[in-house]
Length: 106
Image (tube, rainbow, N blue to C red):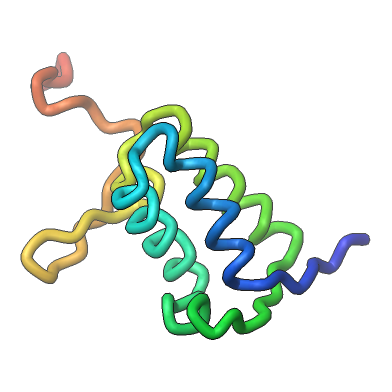
Protein backbone atom coordinates (compact mmCIF):
# COMPACT_ATOMS: atom_id res chain seq x y z
CA UNK A 1 0.00 0.00 0.00
CA UNK A 2 1.49 3.32 -1.12
CA UNK A 3 1.02 5.88 1.64
CA UNK A 4 2.51 8.80 -0.25
CA UNK A 5 5.74 10.65 -0.60
CA UNK A 6 7.50 13.84 0.45
CA UNK A 7 8.29 16.25 -2.38
CA UNK A 8 10.32 19.40 -2.72
CA UNK A 9 7.69 22.13 -3.08
CA UNK A 10 9.90 24.03 -5.52
CA UNK A 11 10.54 20.96 -7.69
CA UNK A 12 6.82 20.16 -7.68
CA UNK A 13 6.02 23.73 -8.78
CA UNK A 14 8.67 23.58 -11.52
CA UNK A 15 7.30 20.22 -12.70
CA UNK A 16 3.76 21.60 -12.96
CA UNK A 17 4.77 24.90 -14.56
CA UNK A 18 7.26 23.49 -17.06
CA UNK A 19 4.60 21.22 -18.53
CA UNK A 20 2.20 24.15 -18.93
CA UNK A 21 4.60 26.70 -20.48
CA UNK A 22 4.33 25.36 -24.06
CA UNK A 23 0.53 25.66 -23.90
CA UNK A 24 -0.02 28.83 -21.88
CA UNK A 25 3.23 30.81 -21.97
CA UNK A 26 5.50 31.37 -19.00
CA UNK A 27 3.53 34.02 -17.12
CA UNK A 28 0.16 32.26 -17.27
CA UNK A 29 1.72 28.86 -16.56
CA UNK A 30 3.26 30.26 -13.37
CA UNK A 31 -0.10 31.63 -12.22
CA UNK A 32 -1.85 28.35 -12.99
CA UNK A 33 0.85 26.46 -11.07
CA UNK A 34 0.37 28.73 -8.05
CA UNK A 35 -3.41 28.26 -8.12
CA UNK A 36 -3.16 24.50 -8.38
CA UNK A 37 -0.63 24.10 -5.57
CA UNK A 38 -2.46 26.58 -3.32
CA UNK A 39 -5.51 24.32 -3.58
CA UNK A 40 -3.37 21.64 -1.88
CA UNK A 41 -2.25 24.01 0.89
CA UNK A 42 1.09 24.86 -0.71
CA UNK A 43 1.33 28.63 -0.60
CA UNK A 44 3.85 30.37 -2.84
CA UNK A 45 5.87 31.29 0.27
CA UNK A 46 6.45 27.58 0.88
CA UNK A 47 7.64 27.18 -2.70
CA UNK A 48 10.04 30.12 -2.33
CA UNK A 49 11.72 28.56 0.72
CA UNK A 50 11.44 25.08 -0.82
CA UNK A 51 9.55 23.61 2.12
CA UNK A 52 9.12 19.83 1.84
CA UNK A 53 5.49 18.78 1.35
CA UNK A 54 3.84 15.41 1.81
CA UNK A 55 1.40 14.15 -0.81
CA UNK A 56 -0.64 11.01 -0.36
CA UNK A 57 -0.79 8.80 -3.44
CA UNK A 58 -4.38 9.94 -4.03
CA UNK A 59 -3.51 13.63 -3.76
CA UNK A 60 -0.59 13.32 -6.16
CA UNK A 61 -2.77 11.40 -8.60
CA UNK A 62 -5.43 14.12 -8.30
CA UNK A 63 -2.84 16.83 -8.98
CA UNK A 64 -1.58 14.93 -12.03
CA UNK A 65 -5.17 14.62 -13.28
CA UNK A 66 -5.73 18.36 -12.89
CA UNK A 67 -2.52 19.16 -14.77
CA UNK A 68 -3.60 16.74 -17.51
CA UNK A 69 -6.96 18.53 -17.73
CA UNK A 70 -5.12 21.81 -18.31
CA UNK A 71 -3.10 20.10 -21.06
CA UNK A 72 -6.43 19.31 -22.73
CA UNK A 73 -7.62 22.95 -22.65
CA UNK A 74 -10.08 22.50 -19.80
CA UNK A 75 -10.62 25.97 -18.25
CA UNK A 76 -9.03 26.49 -14.84
CA UNK A 77 -12.47 27.17 -13.32
CA UNK A 78 -13.52 23.61 -14.18
CA UNK A 79 -10.21 22.13 -13.09
CA UNK A 80 -10.45 23.86 -9.72
CA UNK A 81 -14.22 23.39 -9.39
CA UNK A 82 -14.78 27.08 -8.68
CA UNK A 83 -14.42 30.49 -10.24
CA UNK A 84 -13.41 33.76 -8.60
CA UNK A 85 -15.25 36.98 -9.47
CA UNK A 86 -15.12 40.17 -7.41
CA UNK A 87 -13.68 38.28 -4.41
CA UNK A 88 -16.57 35.81 -4.45
CA UNK A 89 -16.20 32.07 -5.12
CA UNK A 90 -18.66 30.55 -7.56
CA UNK A 91 -18.71 26.76 -7.66
CA UNK A 92 -18.62 25.48 -11.21
CA UNK A 93 -19.90 22.29 -12.73
CA UNK A 94 -17.50 20.65 -15.17
CA UNK A 95 -20.12 19.34 -17.55
CA UNK A 96 -22.39 22.38 -17.78
CA UNK A 97 -23.51 23.68 -21.16
CA UNK A 98 -21.62 26.46 -22.83
CA UNK A 99 -23.21 29.92 -22.59
CA UNK A 100 -24.30 29.77 -26.24
CA UNK A 101 -26.29 26.55 -25.90
CA UNK A 102 -29.49 26.33 -23.91
CA UNK A 103 -30.59 22.96 -22.58
CA UNK A 104 -33.57 21.48 -24.46
CA UNK A 105 -35.85 21.75 -21.43
CA UNK A 106 -35.49 25.54 -21.08
